[in-house]
Image (cartoon, rainbow, N blue to C red):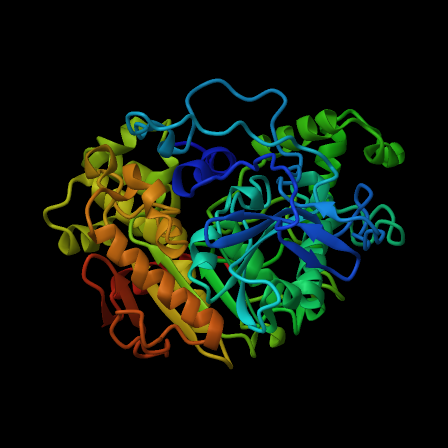
Length: 546
C-alpha cells in the first residue's frame, strides 16, 4: 500500500490544477483606469477581470531562512500587483519513478481544453498574497474569506486557488497566500539554538499570522471588513486553520474557521521535531556540531534532504505529523488544539467542519489493485490499522453496505478511519462557539464513478468554480445548483458566523451537539440527518490519535 507521505506529496502537485480554475497573470498596459489600492506601506496596481478586481503578488512580509517574518520596507511608487509571486520551495530534486499518486491525473482533459499553465517559479522569497474584490473605495465593508492552501505542510501554493467567482458576487473579499513549507517552514532548530532560531519550527505558521495581520491592517482599503475574517481551507489548509485557532498570537485575527477534510488534533511534539532535524542533518551529511550550515546550503540541497527524511519517515495515518509541521510551543502554540480537549483559544471561534464521503480514492493513482480487491485483500489491508478488531468491523461494514464490492467497502472504511472519524472527534470536542458539521456525498462521475465523493471534491462547489471542474463534477445543472448552495452557505458563515442564510437554498442547518450529531448531507438533494456516521463514530472513535 502506498505510504501516506507519498500520497501527500502527490496532492501538492496535482490537486489544485484539477479542482480549481487557474488564471495566469496577464501583462497589461497600465492606464489611468487601472485599479489602484492603498496599503499602509504604499500603493499597488491591480487588474480587472470582468466584474472582479484582482491584486496578485502583494508582498506581506520578508524573511531570512528559518527566521520569523518581518514587515517589508515601504515604497513610494505604485507597485505592480498583476502577477502571482513565487511559490515556496517544495519540488523534489530527484522525484521517484512511477505514476502520480493522485488519481486526478488520470481524469481525461476535455477536448479542446487549453493546456495547464506552467508551474510558477519557486523561491525562498515567497511571502506574497492575492486579493480578489468587487469594489474599491465604495463605502462597503464585505466579509473576508482567507484561503489557506492544501498540500499539508509540504507543498502547493495560494496562487492555485481561484477566488474570482466568490468575489464577483460582490459580497466577499477573497484572499489567498503563500507561506514557507517543509524544512524551510518547520525545521525545529530550537533544541540547537534557543535564541536566534527559537521559532524556526513554526516559521510557516508565523508567516500565515503575518499575512492575517496584513489583512487586519489593509483589507478595508480593498472593500473588506477586518472584523469579519473567515480563515478556511481543505486538507492541509484545514489543518493550518485549526492550528491557528489554538495560537494566542492569532487571536483577534480569525473570527470564523472553516475546516474541510483537514482534521487536526495535535501539533508535533518538540522532541519528535528535534529528531526530524537530526534526520535532516544526517541525510545531508552535516555533523550536528555544524548544523548552522543549514542556513547557507543551496535550496535544492535542503529540499533533497527534506524529501529523503519524509520518504523514510512516513506518517502513520492522515492526521499524524511525524516531521516538519507546527511544533508545540509555550508561547506561539501552547496547547494542542483539540487534544485531549479544545484549547482555550478555540472557544470563541465558530467552526464549519466536515469531510467527503469517500475521501481516500483521491490517493490511489498508483494503486489500481485497490479498486479490484476481493474479500481477502480487503481484510489484509484493513488489518493494517484495525488489528485484532478487523473481523468485527468488517462485519459491520458488510451489513451496512450489502451491495458494495469489497473495494468499495474498503474505500468507505479507509475514508471513515482516515478522515471522517477524526473530523467527528474534532466536532465533539469543540466548546464555546458552535460548530456546524457537514458531509459531501455527491458522487463524482469521473472514471466510471469509482471515485465516489473523493478528497478535494468540495473545492469547486465552495469556490463556485464547477465550470472549470466539469470532468470531476459532471455536466448538467446539478453541480451548478449544489455549488450555489454550498458557496452561499460558506459566504453566509463568513458574514455572520452561521451557515444558515436566507438565500442558500439549504434546509435549516442545526449546530452540532453531542447526542444529536446533526450533519448536513450535501448532494443532489441536501438534507440534515442526525448521526449519519454512527457506525464509524462508534467503531473507529478509539482509533483516533489524540
